[in-house]
Image (tube, rainbow, N blue to C red):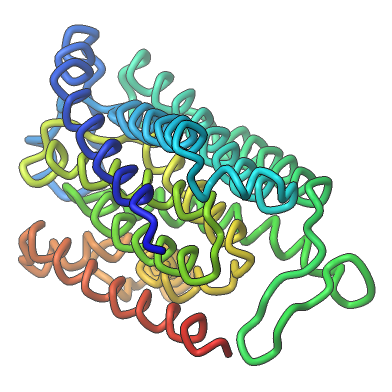
Length: 340
């Protein structure tokens, strides 16, 4: 039987974020919580200085409202989600995923708050942010372990035991996987509507994966993320009326990583999150190459700025990067459909 609840969750998250924009954006303006544009960024971005940031609060609220709505509706109408509450492991996975998103979002919020209060583009130090992110990641993995996680699924191989033998290497790899992807999503937030558009596609992919594999909680969480991103695009598309800031980008980073674990297939995020990886690797490659040769491979990194320097419009960058993400997501969905 077709479950309408995920679709309703998308709609609720979408309208919640759209409506919140009318309240949150003027509030951020009154507080003078404007973005400070970094000096080494594209010169034409200087016109964006002062645009309200910390709009990620809207994403957090929208996702939360939609998830609560879905839970209430499921209990009132005896929906499919209520049956999953009897499965402690699956419930722990999607609730922990939501917790990971909140934890990362809070780190981003503190970082943003320092930036806007001190009127500078640097918030937490790299060491402080790294420690906080690794701590949240470790707590999340401990929650998964306590919640009953025993295996992870790898296409063409199947379920791999992560509690004994070689499988134990999964945990340290997972720690840096979470840390790396969260920061990769953060790097993707540099062009109006880019991070929200790419993440919208990724969340839709995990909705499909969760639907096929019958992970109902993960399906609802992915739906809430997709609806919230779509609603945020209404305010963040070029020319942006608000930026999500680290509050939003780190929230979304934690969300997509959590979703990949919640459906038991974190490895699929490598394909679904292809753009995130390209953004992160462009920075690492640029830094490594420059240190060795004092020359640059790209005109500017993350790579979306390279395309800006090549005279691509922000709308074109968002469109192309979203299409690349869509292709990666379709490839990620294939092994799930084919049960490989």
